[in-house]
Amino acid sequence: MVNERDIRADYERRLLSIDIFRGAVMFFLIAEATGIYSLAVLPALKGTVIGAIGLQFQHHPWRGLRLWDLGQPFFMFISGAAMYLSYTKRWQSGVAWKDTLIQALRRSLILFILGWTIYLIAPVEGNPRGAFLHDVLPQLALGSLLAFLTLRLSIKTQIWISFGLLAITELSYRLWGMVNHSQPFVPGYNFGSSVDRLILGSVSSGNWVAFNVIPLAALIIWGSLAGRWLKNQDGQARKAWMLIIVGLACIGAGLGLSPITPIIRRIATSSFVLVSGGASLLSLALAYWIADFTRTGKKLTVFLAIGMNPLFIYLFAQTGGANWLQRLALPFVNTVISSRAEWPANLAAALITQVLMCVLCYYFYRRRILIRI
Image (cartoon, rainbow, N blue to C red; front, side, top):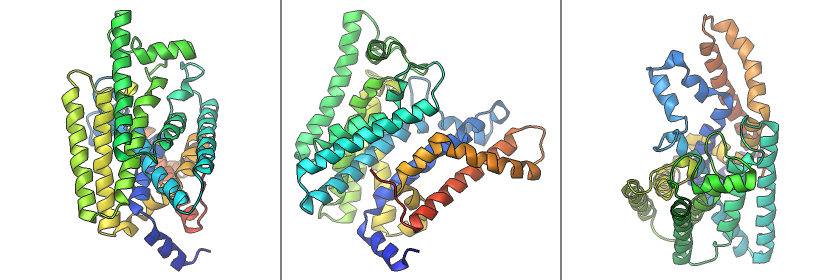
């Protein structure tokens, strides 16, 4: 049993906005494993409020942006913020940079293997064998290692490196189109797809590309910069306003660039990275205002519990845990909900599964059972 005083002390020490933001992102990411989003866009719900909400939790087919397109960028951004806080704390305590480099390499290797394992357990039909490189854990593994190498550089240098990654992306797609007489932003015929054909033998059924790790690494660097900003000595109001101003500027830059470089999540165009980075900053500002400025983070304990154990709940959901809980819930739901259509009972079971996973996270949080690498 964990002492309440220990919980309160740990609460006061942490920058809660990081955990709550990460927890909110994970809350929506694990909901995908329950099938809630797929059920919400069934033909029977077309034209309803549920159907409209469900559509926002489907990736945009190509040019454009939906809420669900921001899931991975948000997670990579907040991982960068948490990474900065974690490693700087180690350096301040006297841990050598060489030792933290070894730790970063080990962490990236574990994340990469876990991403590969999840794909082996539940492969996507029609995708090439190496399509796990398109998923969040392998891309986080490679991107966070790159971002780690920038942590001790100056803020200006980090910014230059992040925009250099976007410039590499922009030039790669455009120059490839010029050399091969193809349009740079056409599904299946762009630079990223060509790289996948070279290293994986074919392209994914959804036109995702492994090269996304390069532009998305910029989001991890921006997250580390945001974490650095929140830990400086400036006033809390100034910190929040700066996040808002920079966030709005990034969104404006991305939208301004979109007529030239369209916003495409599936190949992480530079305009998409700018818009998603701006949205990440605005979301962090909101989390910071709620959790650290007004100190009302205790009211969001569910998000806090998920945010402190993100790896566990993601692996649990993606490796069959969500399906197992849903199979347990469905017989009970069927006895309560009688309908000719299957979707009401399935949707109720999916929602119950989501609640049970949140309860599981809270149980682990209360007992300080944290899965970390």
